Length: 498
Image (cartoon, rainbow, N blue to C red; front, side):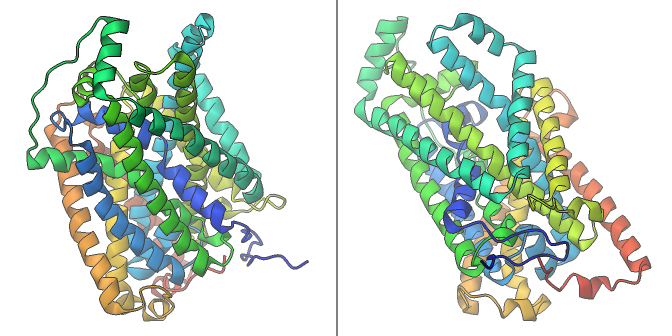
């Protein structure tokens, strides 16, 4: 039987990833901490957002939707591995493509480590609810948390190494279970009202609801939206897997649309359900004192059994992030190596599993740094903020690529198969540029307005250091390519064969 794939020059990446697998890649990359933690911890990191989390969520979705449309447009013209790197390098300039995707790789790799690290307390909470005190105590120890996070991370590194079919067999079932357990949160949230929550809080803990005033300055809304924007990061993983998608010109944009649409709707329903049952004043007070999540909040009104179920759902949602995000970041490295900006060995494909094993292992190593950094810093939002900065820049460049591609690379621009009208393309890309620039400015402003213990706790400065490293690598490697007689301008306008 003829295989449905297009081999690369090193006979590697097979086009085996179907529409459901692609959509699951985007959905699983987006859901996790984004829904179970961030909409509630936002009360600590943006004091004053109060009852306005849903409006902030809605505003955060707007630039993400425009960026998703830009990705969908570009994916039909350049359905290859390393999507965002390839789009910007062929549509704007190879330097911009590399530095943006390098910071994306760094931010997402660190985020993988952060997610691995914050999963463990959910298992501790399950053990605590089941009254397995010795296990709960052990899981609460810092050393145990780091060790288990590393085990979990490298298990999914192994899954990615084993190939696309093994990857799909893990990601799709986990996605289904995640939505099933998440439905419990939605049903529970809309089944209780805030008066019932107050009564249960008084009965179980002898506490009354805190009274807080609510106002909404514009900068507070924008600051919250800039953080919640992180919840919509992940659909780009679909584009990175472009070299392994079956029927990519159809499946890539359709999978992006399915991912961003499904997740956006789920976010609004899920968050509405929790805030329907739990007063925002209680959420804000708890967030100021400790790390909180949806299961912990609803545990006040739910029985221990149902609390365990939704805590398990939260853990699975977080676990789902890992294989999908590892696939995404490793394909970026693969694309760099195929272009000669990274050593060619990084693009080597495993002869049996047909995966870029060197890129996967290096990305796993960077995620390990994220685990250790989260443990030492004691605040996982640092890693999230670095990722948000990187992705805002990356999404901005995608919108700019849609605008500039017909002038910079008209041959590729002619192969776009959705939103073919130039007017339609500009109508999608220009608002995206404006909104993403606004979000990037607000996010940077918030960073420098926040008091930190040391300069290296500022995500903007860390991102700039990463940008400097990326610039050094790019100019060093392109100089070597020029010395080898390669015409950089021509080479970086053609699409790779994979």
